[in-house]
Length: 221
Length: 199
Image (tube, rainbow over all chains, first blue to last red; front, side):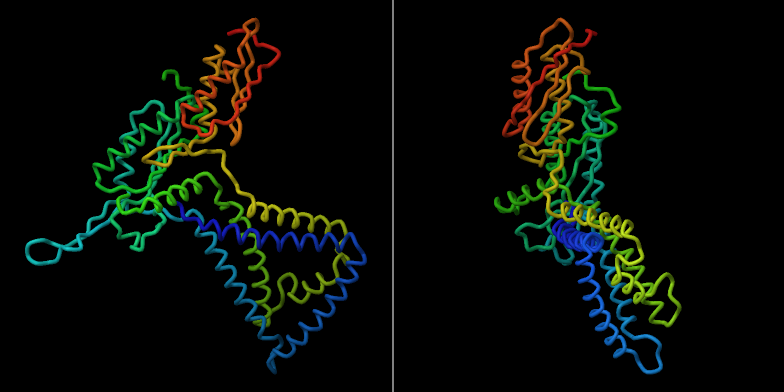
């Protein structure tokens, strides 16, 4: 399923949040309390002296500025790249392969031919879409395939025989009974399991959205 | 799920269910990452100019530091205070996003093949339909709000035709049980004092 690193998100949010909040608090105290501002100015002078001596020590003869600035720029580039990486892993986890497998016993011996079989994610997606297409109590159906998170399995997720996770998101018409819809969809999923011979975790999400509110309500059932 | 141990299947179900019903905090994460990246990019640019011996763009890092060291200085108390307040609130927003559970308005119901997640709004419209059939009023006269721990039903009766609040409560509770909401949350039915003209 969706593999957004939630623990990382929360850890970094708390870290960045605390840094921002402390900086803001510091600024407010500087404005509000003259005594605090006086203390800060003394501390800042000490820091300035310390940093200046370091910069002077790291300036090569004949150069105008310290080589530490190059280090600083490189470190900042690294931080920016890490942040870009953090953004790029949000919402990760979609996969294009539903199931993949090979017969470990099959070897090229002239009789049987070794090889792998893979089912594209489009297979279960289209099966489910076709199974739900005729229903008048659903406003929209969207199916997506997600790499499941391995639990207690040491084999490689891409090569294990089980299917990937399927998310079936439907928007029922206003007033349609959710349990009945869910059980009908689950029954379609069971039929698909039998037809494909592979199965993975399935999420059925009965969602609301703009389209449900705009369309007319369920009259019968 | 032939190769799953029962315990693993249970853990996987719980894990996926939790992912569906709680926020991933993606939006706040992206905002925080972009903000910090912009600050880093700016200082990287100034540091790079400094390291190749070029003139500064806005202020050199040293000038920035002496400005910070002299705060509030000549920047004006109002401006510094406002900026600090914005930073403080932004920081608190990020911290709260990191700490609060972030439950979405959805809940999971029992199913032996799939993990079934229902938006509270979908559930509310079903309950509203049942309540209005029970009260025999038009759809506009019933409003249902579903929260995690309770269900709130508001009915405006048609003038001259009384509605039975207890019957509506029982019907709504029955509809909740029917849709496998477990445990059934307490249902509050409020009947408005003023009726509407019948349709």
